[in-house]
Image 1 (cartoon, rainbow, N blue to C red):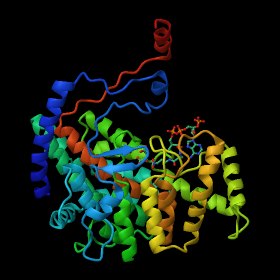
Image 2: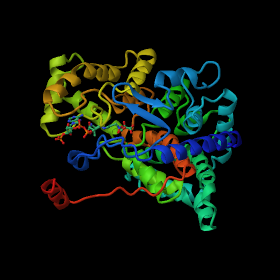
Image 3: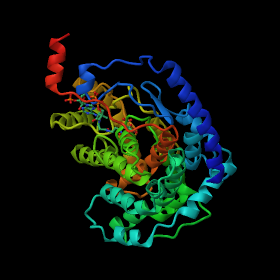
Image 4: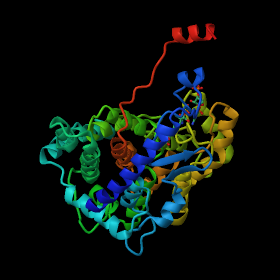
Length: 436
Ligand code: NMX
Ligand code: MLT
């Protein structure tokens, strides 16, 4: 934590000066136009937000501080010599500082997470008392609010701290959150789906490995899967619902706990993070409609049309920005090809990949007929025995916290103001058209 904070201090001074100069010299340069369609259409394509940690290209997919997913897999530190997947602790360092950390620096973060990882007892007791039929994402968001009294940001603001120090308290809260989220998330899982018992934290494990163990999974391959999963779901530039919601709430100087909970409520929507749960439900639905394991591509096509004709979207396909297969889908497919090539659920996902883009193209509505991240994650989790799909978005949420909290720290460091775009009414639009 201390090493990361020291590095971050340098980066913040440098970046702060850069942004100040850009705004002073080029503040009036136009970077886009806004059409009436954009204003009605979910602000799609409007460049109206600066978000430093990652950038999405519609063809190539996400880059975290300039690094593609394969580059992150290659360059970010691994868990010991045998590790093959990147550690999300390293991604956190990369997102915050723009630099690839050393193994030692990453170990320092893992240690910091262990030191801060104890969830207050009263919070654990309340999580255990949640009704079992309360959706895991509702529990997760509520649990993040229960952690909020620990906020140093809120306490410092109350004490009248100088605004130049906001980022330091946001950073502190973010580390506390990231340290405690795995235990909170594991408690929800163990409580809703198992007997409520949970393994104590193991300081000899990394953030993902320890989380996996608390969930009840000791297979080393599953730990590797979680390292990959928690890395690739962390960030997807600033306009997606969870990142944007966290950013918006934080811009009112709501502390990181309040902001993250807001972001998680957006992630819980079926067009966003809940899609990974929906994909599994969808796979089960079409499996039940197929004639048996020897189904043909025509059978698959028929089930897809049945679903579409029912007025539902095909979950896991389409994207607001991407126009090609999501590289997060591709790297999960590669994981499956390497570790579980004969898994029957993987076969179904793979077969759908051959059929769905054609069907969606014929359907003629979606601008992107290719799969996104959610089309693949569920079958990997199923393979290792994490079969309760209603829980999947919580894993997405633990990961997404890494990205959105990193940006929250940087937003406070750059002194970004309260977010408040201008809205108009249809009457205003009509008058505008008439007068132009
Ligand atoms: N199946 C059927 N129809 C679709 C799909 C799909 N997978 N994707 C888009 N469409 C429809 C969409 O509903 C819209 O119809 P209408 O005009 O009747 O409102 C039309 O195609 C145009 O939508 P787009 O402009 O292509 O997509 P948009 O940017 O509005 O939305 C998603 C993007 C991701 C919300 C949309 O593609 C979708 O609903 N996909 C399925 C849900 C999903 O997988 N979400 C997860 C995204 C990734 N994540 O983790 O957040
Ligand atoms: C995400 O990871 O946030 C999703 O792909 C949605 C998006 O980018 O709009």
